[in-house]
Length: 368
Ligand SMILES: Nc1ncnc2c1ncn2[C@@H]1O[C@H](COP(=O)(O)OP(=O)(O)O)[C@@H](O)[C@H]1O
Ligand SMILES: [Mg+2]
Image 1 (cartoon, rainbow, N blue to C red):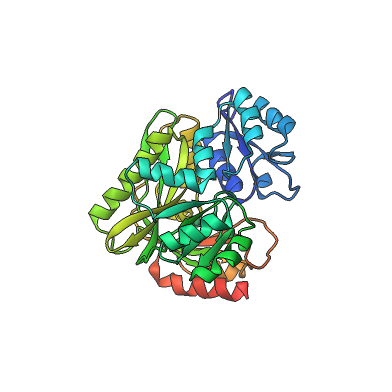
Image 2: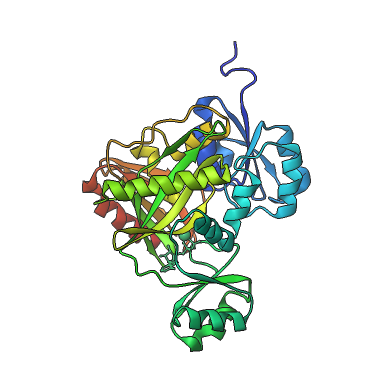
């Protein structure tokens, strides 16, 4: 009498932070058994998966992960090239190394957008202070310098307001290979989360409207208010073409700017994404469940929401759970992480607009 089909599908996850945790939590009801690699003995994914305690690029640990997994997936894209090569040799990876490699590097992302005819900010490759000075002059003296690799939550970036800033900006990014981007005068920030299965089936969630502060996502609202069908169709088309071109398997997020009614691509993430957390309570199938379905070649679930949902990030502090849950239609998702300033420790999904202001207030009070 076995409760799950034998042999149950086995999913390996590189990384056991909140994304790995929510993937594992979504995998459990499907009868999927998860194992993850993470160096922290406190990793949040422990709640729903077996852990191999090791660094992400520990080749022996990744081989052990491969030996207990049918497919290996990732909660982040910054896997080192040697580690990737080692596991690729012994395991099925989803997404593929190409998806990971392209999205590890802002320059290759921009080249991908260009090759697909998807608009993005003007950019120049920067490998030295002299490059930066020339690039800044080219782009009118203003822009954002971003490291090609390892940037997140606004880290690894410096704004340039005039030519005098070049040396300071170059030092801020640690003199690392970078790109200088022209500033986009956007009306708002949007993102589209989409999924492609190993069978080639695709599905796209509606656009989300994202509000950032200090480089960190604060809220996402989906479907993005006031979005016309034309904009939504463009977003669908961009996400699907990117996934098809990369032969991507799993969830992928495309961050966008909306400027004068046009979409401008910013960056891609080859994984479940913070701006897709609303799907846990606002869509028939969450991005986490669809990621699991996709990497295991199972049919994808419905991505079209019946209601509007706002996700509010909990950053640096957790409000009293009972107070959050007292707000009608508020759903609490904690990550089991120690609060520190600027650290994401959870989020709340609100499916009734009446509760949003109160949840934002609770989140900000807890952050202080
Ligand atoms: N070219 C740009 N023009 C204007 N604002 C930008 C530009 N690039 C980034 N930003 C702002 O900085 C934020 C972080 O940049 P992003 O490239 O998304 O890096 P991260 O990896 O930190 O998310 C964006 O969400 C947006 O608010
Ligand atoms: Mg971003």
